[in-house]
Amino acid sequence: MKLLTGNSNPALARAIADYLELPLTEASVRRFADEEVFVEIHENVRGEDMFVIQSTSFPANDNLMELLICIDALRRASATRITAVLPYFGYARQDRKPGPRTPISAKLVANLITTAGADRVLAVDLHAGQIQGFFDIPTDNLYAAPVMAADILERSGSDNLMVVSPDVGGVVRARALARRLDNAPLAIVDKRRDKPGQSEVQNIIGEVRGRNCILIDDIIDSGGTLCNAADALMEAGAASVTAYLTHGVLSGSAVERVNGSALKELVITDTIQPTEAARASSKIRILPIAPLIGEAIRRIADESSVSSLFD
Ligand code: R5P
Image 1 (tube, rainbow, N blue to C red):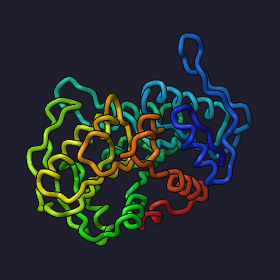
Image 2 (image 1 turned 45 degrees about the horizontal axis):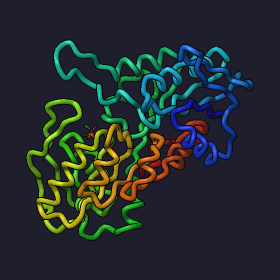
Image 3 (image 1 turned 45 degrees about the vertical axis):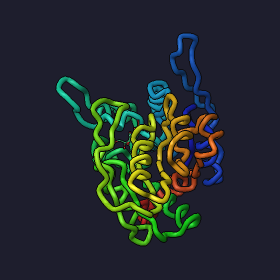
């Protein structure tokens, strides 16, 4: 087994390599003067079981091209098997046609990764479970919920907790977390989104008064969904609101928004390399995801069960 990384999240790739006690494959992934991506692998990979670690996060298109070109380089260098490890799968939110004459970009990106030569995919908290089916190659979808649940139980125990989904689409994810928190009760924020990047809370389903609420979601992008949900929960009498999110996209002024929000704390994983602003925020804490991904890679390489990681 060998690990290769692009430039999207080198710190995470190093942490995964440390977990597996392996070096990262010597390679350069760089740009020509006109910004074309160029990849050169500096060691033999013939016959190897290769794992390419690359989040297609900001800048999404550059990082996606790096991933595709790394896969192509490995295929042409006769790697036996290539697994695209996508800690964050950008474009996942474009998983259906929101209106006439719009694309399904998540499917297009899945096709690109497969056509480039990936034999398998390993992703973390795909925006929707059915995205697994967009790939016609084996795709493992890891869940950050066990990592989050362990952190919650260690810090605050399960007393007086209420798990809250910030929208109807996240209920399955929230229920899975609640189960791991001694079957904590569940509430749902009824959110309406008329335009991308703008959302509004309509209603809260469930009695949150006096509860320590744990909001769980897959992505924080502009922060609108989360901060609006936190405001609405506090207005409804919640004792506190803490949020656990897998992918800290945190675009634009999201970090400032979080800093000024009603949230007690925002906990994100490092599937996306946290920005300086996120690291400097006293409200944001980062949970390492490398042990989960590293263990899944080890099991894929050993041909042992990945799903049993979540038993
Ligand atoms: C939406 O379905 C996702 O699960 C997130 O709630 C959404 O992408 C967050 O976006 P924002 O932070 O811009 O509201």
